[in-house]
Length: 248
Image (cartoon, rainbow, N blue to C red; front, side, top):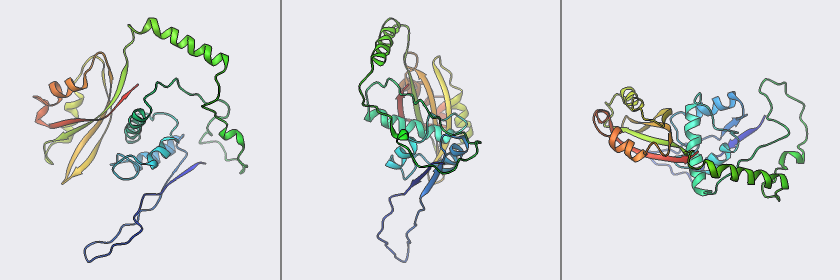
């Protein structure tokens, strides 16, 4: 079983006064994030949160992200939303086009399998070389992929995954009706995904919702300006912001 321990950045200097005391946070521990039970524990942890630690991306998010083997399904909406946010940040840091990496050999252990006796780690666990020289087979496969793309460029259209913040007018806005209004908007090339409510303050919550779009068919700016923030949707929706935009 693999464990990930996250140590929040706590201020070691205590500042005591008549009006405040320091809150000490315990390290979060996640296990087996390649299994449903592991993702379930992460789902519960991320309920009402956007990031693992605090209000912005940290090394804790990258550490946990690296242990989630693939994009979670919509059965885990909080994890799926968090995964897309981290992916969008990484896409900005690494703008190159990835060809994809596959892992061969030993597969991840199945959750129901009996635990084996402790065995010493071997060098095989860390023998993935992303920077090694390409073999002739790899070069040939890359050339074939490029050749296949050229005649299909005019036919294929790229897709993007977008995370939206949808804000209500006040704390009296019916958030269920707000989400129904958002999902009622149908366009060719638009698919609504997982969503969750995130506390903003003063009793107000905003809706965070994922959507997948076909780039040539859907303009996010047009969707916001001409559908989400005009009548009748603006009865519930005060404004919309793009939190993350990630090419698929």
